[in-house]
Image (cartoon, rainbow, N blue to C red):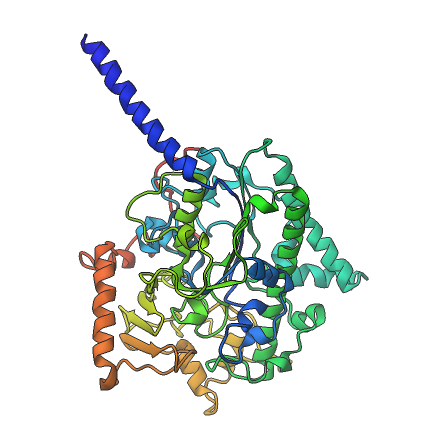
Length: 548
């Protein structure tokens, strides 16, 4: 009798669990998901020029394929990453958590914690065919762990889309036309996606992650003009106020925009194949990037909009197009969105909130009034790998009106120490600026803009730009987004804004404390100790075991 009762209870439990799971799945759209997620792609696309209220770099860039997706879908005006550094940004993306709640994955050369559910593997467990090309996560250990490692890689087409300007320049030097070189590189994009689609079972929903690194440094000097016809002088008067509006910097930025236009060509190839596959009417298309422009002030590794604002464009199957949503959203919102779409049970206590309710509406503007803030932050990027050069911990609360930044160790150098034997040379023997500038100020990627700033650090006309990029910062920063969109006028010490600063500071600390941020709980030094300060390149051991 006892065994029979146990059997009945077990059967009822399983029946209830199956019913709940079935009910959740039955309400799920179960769309296919095409996710284009480009390394270091900041908020740059022609579609944004239409909604920017001032002259910006978006007036120059040409992205017809991305713009078409935006016209057919939704353009998010206020989308932000959780951290402007590759591994922590992507850890938050994969899990829906705050980056600081992902353990060793919260730093650049971190390790994956297998106890954290990741949305791709949850989709796979729910019956999805999953696959990826190029970068998903990291650099970290093991490679692309939250996607199941390289087990689901489709990359037989070759790696050329990861380095468009380098590869296209080589092909042109071999006698090919620019158009022929472009076509050859796009063949790799098509081959990889085609291989993925051929592997699916009939009727099986799928998720394809396309993660090119072409917008990540390095790129070929002058390639923006030679390969894409972007004239650096067209950027004159459109540069952010923290970038010197000089020929060398304009050329560097135009070369970056050229890589963004290469990404647009990739999107065009993928969308054409999606149409040809017959799956377009049942596929959610998502376009975004992991943080802002690398190798420039206020960009990558910073909590200003140049570093944390990213494009987010979503085309919903049979959804209303030509929408612009003003809600404040963060990329960790995508994990629960994909989980809900696939019918997976969304874990509790996530930072991210599913965007599905927004996607299924038809109106533009503010849809959910509670989406009025996002948190961004970082601990360590490259700096912290050497003794005496600890990371620069920051957190920010971004609302529609304000950027509030708290620098927890304002005595440290935000981009790394200027000291050391391997200082930036600044000017090469031939008079050109050096591009190998990684040895100092390590948290700003090497490049011509960085070198130009260092070379002109003693020039009175340009010293402010150097100090803005590399100098120490006060403990608190406050910026008025409407009146200071480039966020260069710190109002934190202005008595006129003291009440606003106090409110934002208290709100930020309340949210961080509730989330258990190691920077604000206990003694606040967790990220200043091993394993988070181990030298870059020495891999951390992943936690737990892979279920794959």
